[in-house]
Amino acid sequence: MNTSSILTTKNSADYELLDSGEGEKLERFGKITLSRPDPQALWRKRLAPAEWKKADGYFGKSISKLSTKNDLQEERGSWTLKKDLPSRWEINFADLKFWIKPTTFKHVGIFPEQASNWDWMREKISQYKSKSYKADIEVLNLFAYTGGATLACAQAGAKVVHVDGSKVALGWARENAELSRLKDKPIRWILDDVRAFVKREIKRGRKYHGIIMDPPAFGHGAENEVWKIEDDFLRLVEESVSLLADEPIFFLINGYSAGYSAVAYKNNLLSLQEKFGGDIEIGELTLEESRNEILDSGILNLGSRLLPCGIFARWSSK
Image 1 (tube, rainbow, N blue to C red):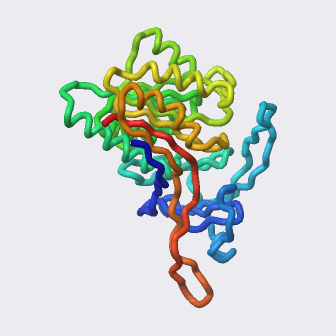
Image 2: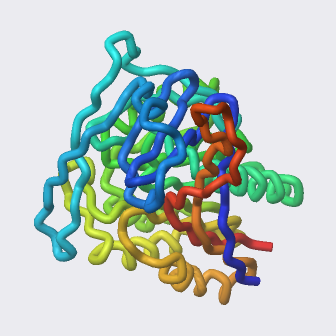
């Protein structure tokens, strides 16, 4: 079965999309509000400018062009933060804990829209454990960033290999594991270029029940190896598929800034469906905006809007 879905992360105690529009989004992480650019917010803001000015931090961007085939652009900039703002702070989100910290790439250490995928992986791992007598479930997380998917899978009882080319992101992920009381779970933390690591795993004969990848449009490996999605994606997917166990559980691909359709990612998963059966689901990842608009006359309850944040394609066994 193949389906298309819009997956939505709703507001919670420690995360809220307060408003969006005119190329920006206003979010609350714990008690701290941050304003950041978001080109998908192609509509008018609802909150008054005075409400946006109350943000504890604002990101001002400066675009620098990179010399790649597609003339990709990288958003760098700087934050204007209130003087009493801590350098980092923790939040509870999706049954995990994370350190939030503003970075020069406008990121803060978490992509809240991924919560639906984390729940899906937890469910798939739990279902497999309930029907299989095999002791171990092994998951490979490529471009693993600060570890949300890694921690969700470990929390569900899987052994996880977490691979990222950034030493900073890897350290951040380990700190999130400790914060979430998962530091003693069977997680291998690997600082490496994902392509080089996958090739070595093939030679070692390693197999995984689940594979996650979140490839950027452009990036660098641990030794400054250049990654370009138009050059490297297809081979990486093909080689990663060869790492799947005889009874695989899932294969998840996320996409953000590359400009591709979820259908393009789906087409790379059709071979899995032909070989193992199962289901493929594609769609968009979104955040639900708060319903309240603050006016001079009070608070008006409006219908919620969804902020598009990325695409996904995921295969799972029956």
